[in-house]
Length: 201
Image (cartoon, rainbow, N blue to C red; front, side):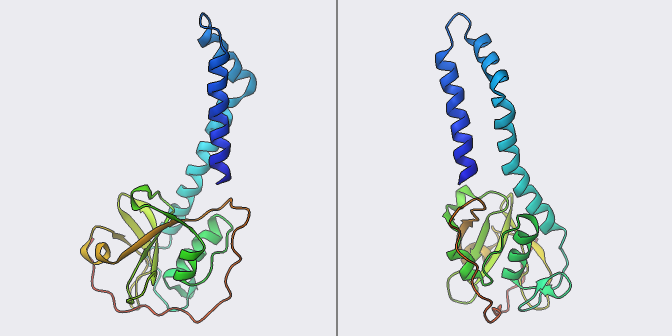
């Protein structure tokens, strides 16, 4: 990801500056170098930009709690299905248009380990006896936000609940800075969601 590469470069420059400083005045030389090159501010800006994007995405998604599920829906006015909700959140906060269906979103994003999940990442579940048939947005603390099923509303769920734990199908990260991001897939038939067992909060 471009942001990570930039951060790595800035950190490498820090180490280079530290290595070049004389032992007697290492601290002073490093401080002067950082101030002159404005590296501290640039590193902090990169770090904050990553965090702010994720925070903004989660904050925006939480603002849609209670919006009803609607098959094929992708706006607050019409309601959301699972992938429509994810697509709308990324479009509104990042300006990125993801493919329409959950399995297409899985195919267009980067595979990550569950242990590497960060707020804003996508979590997928097998709820239709096929891979990647349901998707939500990870918000941290083992929880995700999604539009679950007909008759329900956008809500937060715990991934540790047995229903979701047994159906977890993988985690993905949206590469917002990828230069060769896949083109959005054409709109297809809206995905159907099965009846989902009641979950506990």
